[in-house]
Image 1 (spheres, helix red, strand yellow):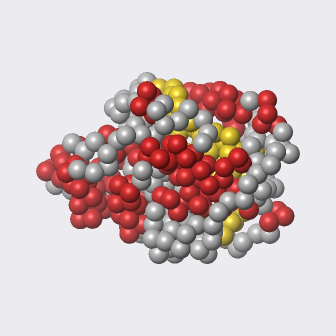
Image 2 (cartoon, rainbow, N blue to C red):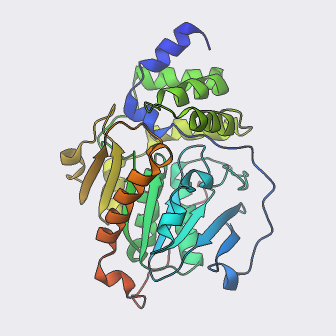
Image 3 (cartoon, rainbow, N blue to C red):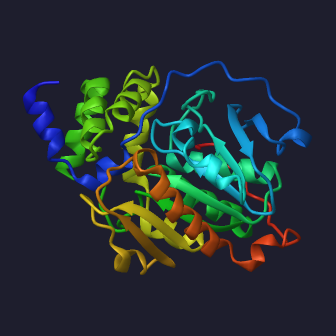
Length: 322
């Protein structure tokens, strides 16, 4: 990437970069589908989406409350590896690869964040889950908003991880167009430069290298480019409202401001801000992050979370355009 291109990327809005800051490994052949009866036993399973993409997911722990971990743009489920051991002591934990990411299938007519919401809601429905808390990092935040709206009373809350900073942020304008042009021109170099900028911690060289290698060399460039463009199509105020559940964020304190008062216009929203961390806070400071996450989950769960006999509504099927 040229010096001029790097400077242009440095001037892009930090909220936009935070939403688009993860990356995915080369896709592997998906494992054979498993029977629904085995879909909640500890281990690795595969769910097939409405449009035929095999989505691998892992299950750990047990109990009435299920925490579904939703990764970010061009990430995969391994980005939650430092959280699963802490969570499984109290909750059933499910971590999945979204289509076009990790080991999941990558055959889809249109790549949209809304379609991912249908994928997550479809898995919740398929496994007949109730008392679910969605934990979404970066792009996983809006994916979780859409999934909660579709799953309705199956979902009890959302934990946003360095995402959903400002429901009124405008993903349009010259800066965004410039970023789109850079990703179209040289996806891998632009991705690598962006990843470097999303770390402010000392001693994170190994994690930086892992993220760059896993994501910026991805063969699914078209998936990443399409999803970047789709962010401008999301009506965030509407999605906040339609989610219909409490939203609690664990965000980095800088460089992007979490506008709690703005978000409260559209949802029951609050946030914890971590100092001295970048966008991958769950990877670089897992012990501190896990403490915040467990406290937040306990607050969202509440005493009624153990009541597994609650009624759950069927989830509508995605439209053909999804």
